[in-house]
Length: 320
Image (cartoon, one colour):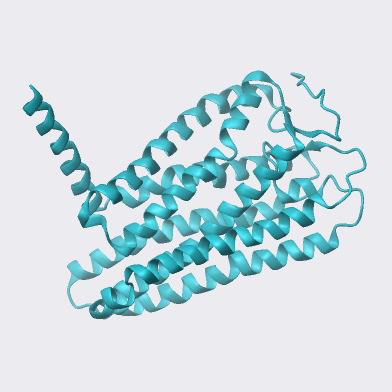
């Protein structure tokens, strides 16, 4: 098995074990992750640029979608570059400060996305259930406030969990059983009873994940009721297309994130691998798919792309 550099002493840093136990898998993952990361950067950057340039996308839905894309850009960038460097150089070390920062940023962004997805569900609920009052209810100030609530809530949760996690004594243990610093992996390094941290973590799961899921379910139950009452098949199809993209993103993100807690303390190598692949899914694959899911059947975004490309071609012809 391929060895890796772990010359840092535990007092000055940690070793990110990652996928080092599966060296052949690492090389495949390096290529795949590099491609996925580039697609993630391009797709989410494209959403942000289009939502700024095209006036037709200056609506609450695309305001929140641009927030989600910005969040996903930062979310993947907080872990993926470090992971690629580790795989390529076999230098698995991360400084203590770097680990704290990575955990705080990754957890803060993940928590923010949980809340933001529930806000987006509320936006769809108002759009379909209260269409005549949509512009009055979802005015720009409310959208900004809802967006701010999502970001503040997410990073407040992250601050509390990060502080509690790094206050635990580790008694010389410094090998993190993942490719990035996260709360479950860091709790495994502790040499004292972590039940207080685990209770706090599961309480945070209820607040950050379960309650938003409940709000999303409430929104979609009412949306389904409203859609069923729509007389025209075209109207029903448009409503389902609009909500279907968001619902698919919710299922992928929440499903993989919540399932990750099942592998919080894996005993076997296969369980470790499953847990790491699951973390890779919600840390990279979901952010990569979000722009594709939202744009493939979205006429507004397709129109904005064609308009932007047409404008660039016109400028090229004028210059020629």
